[in-house]
Image (spheres, rainbow, N blue to C red):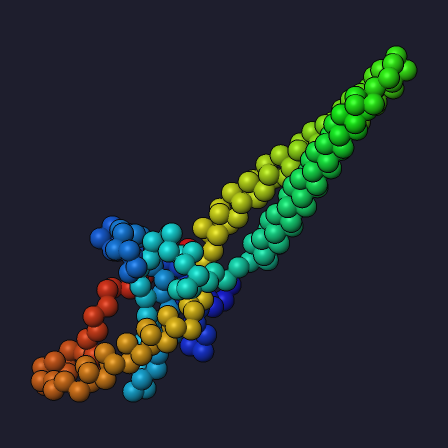
Length: 229
């Protein structure tokens, strides 16, 4: 059985859980959600340990300002592969653009030479030379076009591969179990809970209330009790 990373009070890791109720809402966009991030050992105060949890939609699990997933080795390798594919596509597109510019420069040079030769045209021999130059240019341009088509095919294959890898990454990210809250988010939640606990502990309590519970009443929803994902 794997260790629950969220049990360590010294870290900022929450475990992802699903709730049965459909009446919970994302704390960011208020969209209905069944996803909850839960940390059992969150804050120690007055010799007691308190849990923290909040509801969040799947879209906002990708909010980098709020939290970051604890990526598995497989996700890291896939992300690195996607980055390499992006670089390969960039290089291929640069090569195609460079060859296109070379072809344009060559075509413009040939046109200039042709115009100059027409001005000094004197007879049949010149016509034969012009025909030979045109044939040579046609063959050269044909070779360039074939080469360009091949590179475009390579780019298309790389793009298809990239799209497949991205779909796989989305699927893997949905299966992530642990999320690490960013420092601002974590500190804000901790300070808010500490203030709530302090206010609750300062309120006078009756003897009857004390017999029922010694825990302060906090404005938090019921934590999910079933097994995490």
